Image 1 (tube, helix red, strand yellow):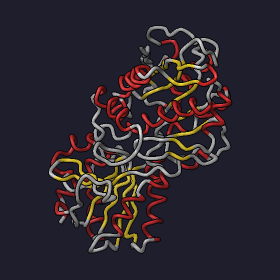
Image 2: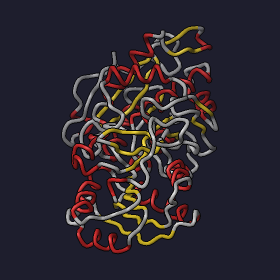
Image 3: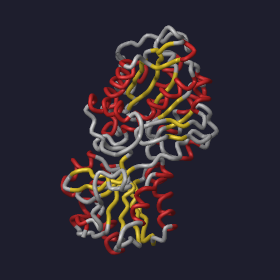
Length: 403
């Protein structure tokens, strides 16, 4: 059983609840393998992550039901334990906690954290202590170009492939969209998405009719929506987290904006609950969803998800987390030892199995092949619409809800 601890208030280390005994000497064959992580159980990212604490506990339980992690040098399987803290959705808090896990808890390896805002300050902690870190939902490519040797991440999708399947889908439609309009939340990852995919849209021959940015605190989008409506784009692309996109979509409905498709880069059940029927016909992407064909560890992952009562539309980046755990599990078994340097070698330019397919790293720890599956909201339900061989339903084109 994992012992979960959270930080309360701003006191960070001084406010820990409970106690977790220090692990045995790193590399021991007589003690559990100990991973350390932080999860945004509270704070601004909690709507995407608050159920991951229980899921992490269940993941370890399911691994241990299989006997644990195979370690060849020990000649046996070792049980898994995971130390978990609440980083409160604050990067500086996460830095303090990873320092504590390295220096006090003596964890063997790091898994997590999430979010590109954490991808700058947290990985240097792993570098300092030479502890391999397989983070989860950190997607911005520049974070992997700093020469770090102990940092990998399992963002699904990575920015460079975020909409590869979506734009492939657009290229196959009749009538084919000719123009696009980007509206971008002021956030590092959403700005990176727009920077990459606005260029790729133009390379495909689509005319960029406009590109606007907005603060997550903005509530009245009337001037922006009127400008967008006047441009008459075929595709409206909202590069935004789910909740900030809600008021824009509602005001687009009120002002009767029309398009072939309205796409939200980070679409989730949170937005569906927020705007109700206004989400009809909106498209997005999901890292993975039950019913998508292909991949490994599907049965294991679905067992963890079902026990955790996680709906993948409500928590769309859960597969990034599960994937990080699966990769660290496989890396330890490939290394054949609870040895940080051997695990680092196993991770370097490695290829690992997951429900989304093979996750392949480049020399910087960037999972450059990870993409996502386009979805369309149809009668309030999630329908995976591309590629056809893996889809759960057919795309309605042009989107009837936006005509």
